[in-house]
Length: 348
Image (cartoon, rainbow, N blue to C red):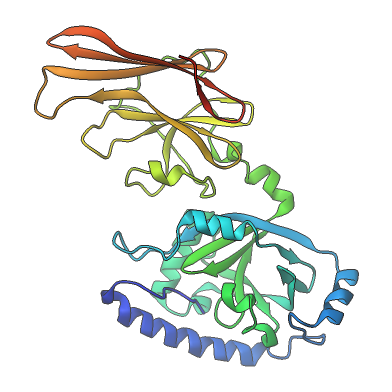
């Protein structure tokens, strides 16, 4: 029942062929068993009479893009489109759900909520293991035992946009006010709008800071403990993962709706290197190298050490000292003001 990967490394071709066959076989069976569940006349996108009637009779709940995850086949397997393009596309997609009707950008279909044993739903043991782990790790959804899913009116399985975003056979996993669509090997998560004000806010994704201003702490890389960002809807953090699956960070005191974090960039020649990020409206607005050291590999005679501080007014001072043969001199000093929109305005 899973529409998995269209393009992957040559070594996975056999896997995909087998998967495609098993999905097709299973979905035929499902469609035959569920063909008689529809209790109303079916309609498609151009049936404006039915659409207008349902608009009057049904009360819809709105679902909005919340998160997404690319199903990668490995380090050398890349997506057709970027995460930014996915976010841009699906933030424009409107999903409305009533008691018996689902609408995607004004195209509507009747549906029914079904439940199935998870192992039966996924069909193959390796698919069961893969997807139960993905949904738990990236969306905190437990589907090890039972899968709840939207099953479309059979007449709309192959009608756009449903065929573009639903699994083969017109299915979409749903749980805890979440609906999971599929697009170009991405799992696209939509969440009911009432909950988005709480959950989609980065302040609920990012841990509360244990620090108070003024802040001038030197990070001890030997015993530092990082928070792990579980949300996947903050645009721009992918540039600071440093070969990790999720962003590691140290939470600093917020400025109104601006989240401020210190992020390690220890995946190159230097394991002591930190960037200050500001996050506003689910997007990294600014970043600045603020703490760490630089030196020529193999040469201990010269080193540059950078440190920073933040005062009570969210003024950031970044200093770089040059250490040469034991002598310390100030090489550079910059001051920034963090604005209530997350920008770093240079003060000198």
